[in-house]
Every structure is written in C-alpha cells, then in structure tokens.
Length: 318
Ligand SMILES: [Zn+2]
Ligand SMILES: [Zn+2]
Ligand SMILES: [Zn+2]
Picture 1 (cartoon, helix red, strand yellow):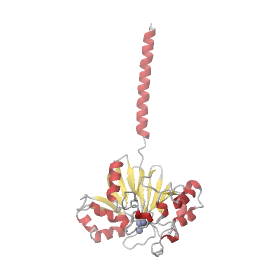
Picture 2 (tube, rainbow, N blue to C red):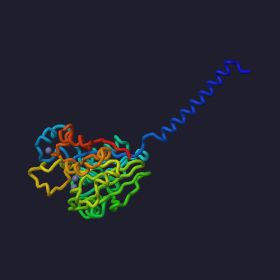
Picture 3 (tube, rainbow, N blue to C red):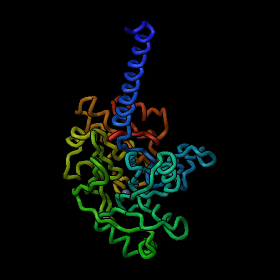
Picture 4 (cartoon, rainbow, N blue to C red):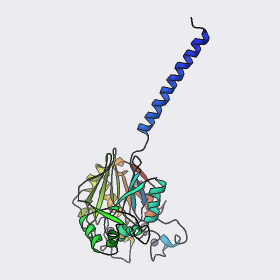
C-alpha cells in the first residue's frame, strides 16, 4: 500500500515530468515559430542628393547643416535572420552608415548589392568597397545588362572589378532570383532618364508577403505596367515620392526631371480601398518635398488620404 506521502511524491514526480515535457514543447514551438522570418528595412528615404542638399540654404535644409538630423539617401535592406545574410538595394552616398546598420544593428553579413540604375544616389556608394576604403573581396553586385557594361567599361568602377573588390552577377528583366528559402527577388524595367543604364524596380517575395520598391520612375502613365493593379496584388509598395506637387522647384524645368508627383500618385491610386492604399509608402523624397519633414501639412495630407511616407528604420516582414 502506498502511504499518502508516496502518493503525493508520485503525483509531484508526474507533475514534474509533465512540466518538463510542456517546457520542452514550448521551447521547440518557440524555435519553430519565433519571428525569424525575412524582412525589409528602410535605410534611407531621401532623393539622390540627400538632405541637407548641396547648395541648399533654404528653410528645408538650413538648420540641418550643423545637426545630424538630415535624411539619408533612399535605400532598403533585405534581411534574412535565418541565414544572417543581408542585401542592399542600391549603393548610395550614405553606404558607410547604411552598411553599418545592416551588419551591426541587424547582425548580418552583406551578401550582395542590387542596383536600380546609374544615377548618383543609387550606385556611387560602390566606391566605398574599393582599395581606398574597404578593400572588399568579391562582393556580388547584381546588375542589369546596360548597368553591367557601364561598370565594366568605365573607371573608376572598372577598377573595382579589376581588383576583385566586386563581382557582377547578371540580372534579367522579369527573371526572379532565389536568395534564400522562400525568398526571391525580381527586377523589372521602369521608364526613367536612362543616360548610362536602364532603370529597374524590384519585387521581393518572402514566405508570407511581397514588396515592391520603385525609387525612380518618370511617370506612371509612361509605364507598360499598371501601378493600380500592382498595388492591389502586393502587400507593401515603396514608391517614388520625389516631388510633392507641380510647383515645388520654381527654378527648374520639371519636365527635365519627371517623377509622378505625390498628388498625382494619390489621384491615380485613390480608387483603391483603404487597406490597399495603406500598403503604399512614398520614398525617395527630394529635400524640397514638404512631406519629408515629420508632422508637416503635406505629410498630414498624405496620411489623411490613407497613404504613408516611408521612414528610416521602418521594417516590413516578408
Ligand atoms: Zn534617384
Ligand atoms: Zn533643401
Ligand atoms: Zn534616377
């Protein structure tokens, strides 16, 4: 016969086993379902010239020369915590800080850079990989055909190839590339001032969500694809928000630097229901764009219409 004490002991033992099993299961479930899914992080939101902007002493930039409160040039990072790898889209003039954020804060190793086009805000950061600075070894640079031959045939970019600081991986319009488990990226051509290279945007597809990134495009109407349909079928859209409206740069001919004004994009996409409009985040904002400042009337107008302005360090799970 068991004494009462034995029964109590037996019960406690069983409870202990149960608790141990429960704990093991919880840890295993934790590992299985812990949020280590890939994500995109915004590393900069400004147009090519950044903010403060060279030569600008107007109210937009005046107070920023002495402080560190400007905006870095548009760039996004793709982070895969499962493999601790990351990729940048574009090598901007702010690459040093953006690379540091990606590697140190997000604890990853840079696995490559995808380029959109050969305008200064999108590729000159490649020089940081060269002999004078990092002396990097064979960093994969993903580029479209014209961009590739531009880098191969012009100094100082060609020197990066000669010294094997970088190696070029060829991209093809509309062809997706696998960069991780259930993680894909696909370039697509967009109309833009293609002086030295073609221009692409990227579609990034993760295990659960997809995102498009189009920092530069001339006008939505010049594109063979339909931005309205694209936003409907994507989860997050980071799109060209260079200028807010028509009369933003009185001293420049806006036809020479065409972009869809934010007001035009809002008009184009206003037929979408609120949940779809919410997917849109304007990025690549010029220093003159009033919405680049937080809590601006222009910014409030955008959010009142249920659209967003991308901000540095925004994260989007894929
Ligand atoms: Zn640009
Ligand atoms: Zn300015
Ligand atoms: Zn451009």
